[in-house]
Length: 359
Image (cartoon, rainbow, N blue to C red; front, side, top):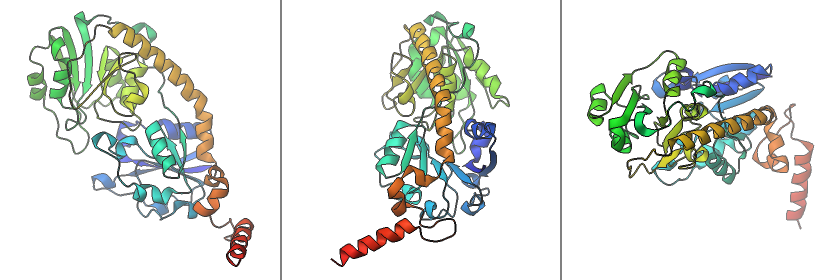
């Protein structure tokens, strides 16, 4: 099958979403990539570029020229929205008809239970799953640090407007004397970069402070993270949360705001630590060894679940949208068969409705 994969071009740089097209390609399907650069002044993807493919996957970045009802123009479209598109952490949900309207009769693959609930409540066929990357690092390194006497922490200053270095200082303030902190300075597009001086000002009493900037190899970053006990999540909410999931897969204690999708994976004080970003308070790490052990078990179990779910995810993406709706799909989506004719069943139903109206 020939599949069009439309995605946000920033993910081309981070490679955080390639697990899905790689899964499709591993099963012998041809995947054509369409990276949308409209957000940075580049070329946006046009829906017309995707229509000739057997199946279309739209990962977060919605192409231009989207029809009012996608299902009337293509029989197999899967939309994969991200939770952070909705800004739930910043306030209540408002009218989402403009977002969901074109996808009535199509499919949604939800990597968040919140997104799944929003999609189904708006009448969209949705499948929910949880992604977990393969285990990072050897098990022998998972619990290297077991006390707060020499606590190692990692923070990626990705969105300083959401989680600033000052907030991290509030969370870790009581542990500076025994803290080994690594701060990675590589902000998301549109964010004001945190400076090295900002970091030093926030942690004047830190036992050991190291700083890095953009690293070419993801493995370089992961090597630093694997040597840590604590990973401080960099954003208020995540779509999938590849970065914190990779830390979890290494058996690290993830410290995150009590928002999705982090709180869909983490239980405060059990396999991670959750805090209120509106009122950050100093954290207590006296139980770090047990939390890390539970994080390791959580990652192992979720990885097994993901491996079991892969066939179902593939099947969901590959099957026609109409198979997800049954009788309802006559109304919501495909109105014509391959020859362009109105299906016999629809003609029959219309005749029955006319007869009822005539009394």
